Length: 187
Image 1 (cartoon, helix red, strand yellow):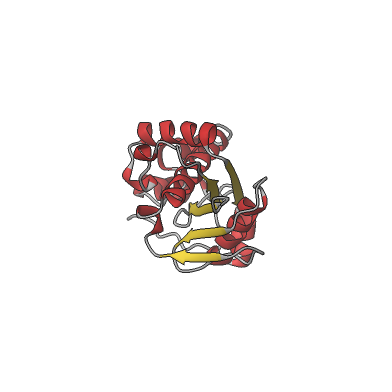
Image 2 (cartoon, helix red, strand yellow):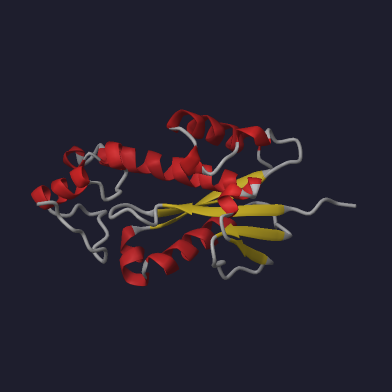
């Protein structure tokens, strides 16, 4: 019997006030070193980067999907997240039998999909998707930040830290800030 091809899907970047929302889609092999996997938020930066390299090298298939700040502003973050997930799934070269998505909602794709609450702590394929989505987004934010160093994107990756909000108050919004997100400024 041919093993069922299971694809895990997760996103990174729903909460930031700047940058894209990014989704990962991953299909793992049976002999993958599963012990390196956890929810991306539970891994140190070094462990997450290491795991991302291993996932990209050893996964049966993987892809990244993006939804850009303009799309987030136009659609809303929920719809943009589903769009990024759809793009990640479409980027796969294999057709999965089943897609397992972290959370409550699934993208509209022509595959069987199931939403799994806390799937990024339960399902290895979703953990792997979480890791590659987070590392891809962080890398993009750091690289973009080289063009606008005054925003210090390398430090906060677009999340609404106090320092980031102070910088937005001082310099205004950059081209990648989400204009539909409310930014509260520190006193």
